[in-house]
Length: 208
Image 1 (cartoon, one colour):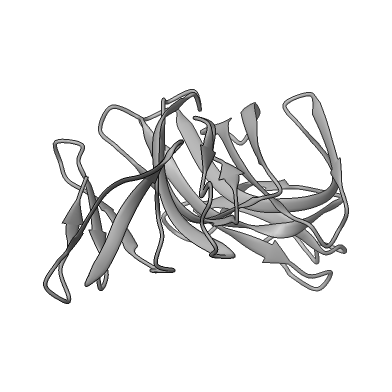
Image 2 (cartoon, one colour; image 1 turned 180 degrees about the vertical axis):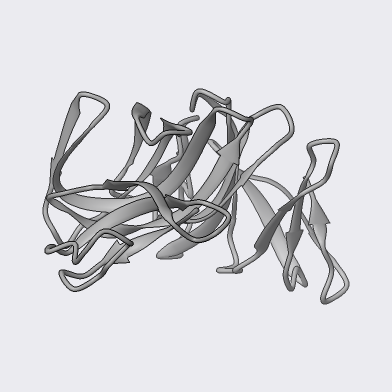
């Protein structure tokens, strides 16, 4: 499987797509196209796609414009993409989608052994990843954050960082989140502001 944004000349395996649109495509082991899901009418791109068990595919993306998924219609200015999480069957049929709003940009997606979704992204000033406002009182235009959601996309927890860091996301086999970056100075931000802060040797991974 892979995903991204296609141009009108993009050929995913069954001819030129004919439009600019985000997409998800799945291929056989020999490279033949099995199915594709094109988000016609949408701008932006799909930033991550992962299998979820044996019968689902989940994705994260930043989408704008007007499009329909799983029977729901969405519309926003073409220049203002927002964060979305969603799922399809292993044959490419729509299952569900969640809109995180135009203040959220999703960068990475990981899926745990229990099917839970973990994302890394950026929030624009004060934002909400599903569990209440983050970045309250911070004078930073882009705040990195990590959030976890149930297999069906329900918010479980989210944490933001106040130093403009760009961590890379990994999952421990037992479910912990591993962030690899330079954490010389950091603090967690919860709904009411900083939760904790300390100096960590640089570079150093951080486990949540």
